[in-house]
Length: 468
Image 1 (cartoon, helix red, strand yellow):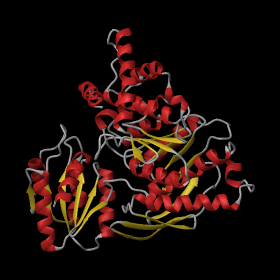
Image 2 (cartoon, one colour):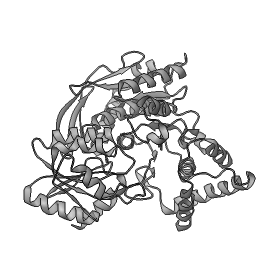
Image 3 (spheres, one colour):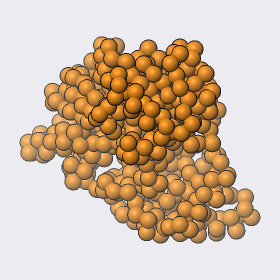
């Protein structure tokens, strides 16, 4: 396992390279294991992890074996590869990485070192090797960045292509405008796949509609489910072909660590309490509908899928039960997660403008008229001024840190930026000091603590809170 980690660390020197040439060569050498597994391909800027957590939990309640590949790792280096609710073991990791390394060595030899896969390509190849070995009922495969040229896009025929919220991020790779970014992400759409997306900005919606029209044919099993959100927080799910979903989704109540909502006449509760989680949860329920029918009944005709009167009532009830319990039991660390009760301590992986906008909405709903003590650590290549502006109206005191990431923004620089909106800001040399100082302050003033920004510092922060 240690040797496998060292091999991967060495490949990280190659950086990030968008394109599929290396991946096609690597998968061919490995025997194209990606073609042996049913895949739900997931793209988007925000919400991929939460959506995957919901869908995994629901499928588990339905007794389906689920594989899941997601990145980046936040709390454990092995959490990127999961099977049936557990992380890949060190032994499994080493075994699969050995196969991938051997394939890399053969390719390098045959191409005179012209093809050298990057770290993410190698990690993705490991995922395909691992899941082909484990043979889960379905694999949830997250795009790393973009979509069209992402290493995960070597798959030929996914069961479904899913788009969570698309917003501005990684502009240096994907383009400055939302339209450009959306076009890159829409590149995962495949003919014959069920295609879903949640609430999107109008320009993103236009891109996804156009991409869908470009891949759709007269085959019966190609359709698109859209879930749209109104400004009144009532949700109106629709489809391009027919009105499969006709009920509305409504917020029932929200507080830290608990969100209640109704969907299609059924009440749900989730412990992942960000307002944005209603989108991720209902999108997961919609995709589960397809997985459930496919795996249990092998339905190919979508109208038969939704209207088949021969499916026993008990099966429908089992499906509803799996959805309710799956939503309740879903966990995804670092997404408006309560990690301390006295004082109330919440961490959230909001790391770009749109995610921070959703965090601000959640704070407003969860802590009505109550100021917040913030711990903030942000990467330098993010639009941090826009992010700060969104949360400053809720701030009591702010503590800035430097994330342990080569791209981390210096906490001193961040503190100076904060002073444009709020004078009560303190730069902390270590994450541990920020945690200790924020807890001491909150014990005095009764304000909740919310730590957000780069995912790269949340693992260390959680450990510090546990020690305190």
